[in-house]
Image (spheres, rainbow, N blue to C red):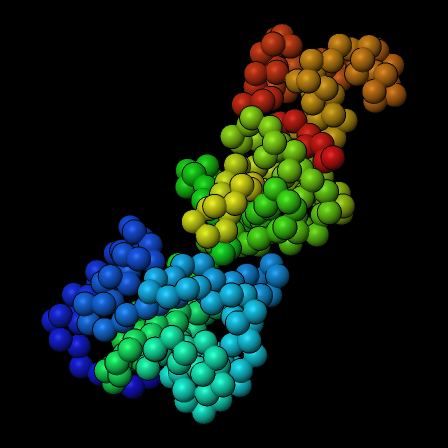
Length: 323
């Protein structure tokens, strides 16, 4: 990156930009940037890791670049160099002439810069196009590079809007749109075991369509290991605009020394089944079900089905049943 000297005005604008990213989004951030860079028009283009494609999110000053144009830019050698070096590309520079003539020059734009946006952790989230009818000052590229990690949050389509108090530390998570598309959850490690389970997308859809805000349960994965699972209603994508759900898990041992069969029995109790119904569903005798319940009541310290059901639901002791 080129070395530049920042004046007090530059420093104030950079600090304000970071604040506006969190508070007012793209337009607030670009208002702050315009205090030091004469940007007449801009556009944020997001990279969607779920599809491997780019799409326009927010623009001001000119019409949005359609998806075909965004993909055309992403195929340029100049784009690949910018991605490798993580530096802005000056529109009209070698390798961008044709793109500039087709999409910018006919509308009176004289200068433009496109910056790849990477989060501080190194993940690529999209692009920022800025254009002007006059030459941009030489500090434009270095200044935009300096603030690009903050701006990268604006094009991060993996973000999910969830209650920060709803998910304790130690969980791995995935998110699903209602249509079944899986997304990562920013700030939480990916759950490989949930991502590999095809039924999780349908579970997410069923949960989204329910009136529940959250759900807890126990799940035995394909390898027979028990996991504590939590579901939370969430918005996914840009600014949480798509209805979705977060599913999170962490390995656990069955609580209260419960056996797998006892977990199945108490799950049926919580659903309101009688002993004969439980016996029929699990292919057991009523006497065996009664024995299991005696052990369950003793382990959980409950003396009635009502108290048992309340405790099971509150602590997420039911077995999670996949669609």
